[in-house]
Length: 395
Image 1: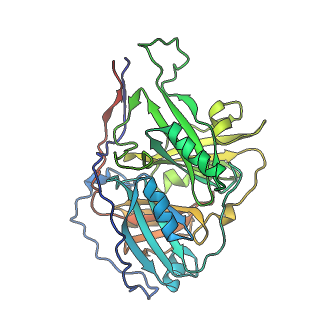
Image 2 (image 1 turned 135 degrees about the horizontal axis):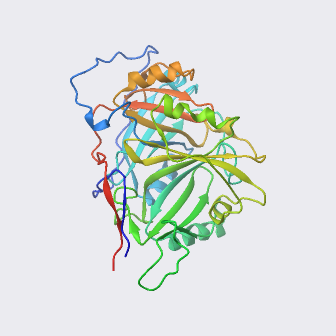
Image 3 (image 1 turned 90 degrees about the horizontal axis):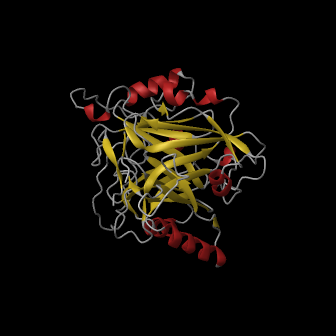
């Protein structure tokens, strides 16, 4: 059987036990003045790599109405609460632009703590219902991708829930080639290397699930044996946006230090994958561009920029609304990133603590996404390892 060497970052996977959420701390952030932190230059941040040390996407922030329902749902997907926090109305408005007190809950899948987390936001006063249960490909829609160990069973779970009246829109699992030579000829011993993928669209969260066949990527999709639905952490993120020019995404490279993962591509309904997963209708096309951290292959951003007319709900895709309304990164070089974002005329907030007491700033990109950049001065447990062998399953 074939073997392939690619450059990825290795994140070892460890076991975990379910925990009861700890109590929320008493709010002590009533002053609007940013907290002054002593800069500790002696701390070794070589783990973050060269340049700006930007991570892959760390969290998808999700506005939820029912905390109990959300914790039960994400628990089925292998997530547990690892941190809680609170901001009063004045500080939440200064940081997020939302005049409402905020409770935040950080959820982690297994021991994958360097990427793929979920942050639940429970607002005291919501601005609105968000993008919600919408046509796939709606401008402002966000989709999070997770690996699964059994996509057929997972499809049946969501399809049965839909048949029972729950608001899930489920696509059929489709086969996608991996190595570029997937048309064969194949035999019993010379087998195709593929994935099976499906999309699930809901009221507060949209999923892309995939299962691998014939290969593994250690650290990119970690599934704990006890996870009820056999699902991993979030490995990458899809964003449907409207832009006047692809150049409006340049700030991701010039200000944040991400890398374009290949050139832009024009795709559309003539391709089976996009046609099925994003329910494209005849003639619908989009520009596609991927960005990744130079320090972690995990936590990629995949932008879909439709050419044809689409419903646009991007004004509802921001903190204070329901659904996936922001994404976060971390870096040990927060001051440098804040300066570069400021010089790019992206109007970041002052550096101040978020609901977990982390030094951070928030800004909104021209494509309509809200970003929070967090300062982390020590490496996560699953510190990235630059190179490993992509494992093809041998005879």
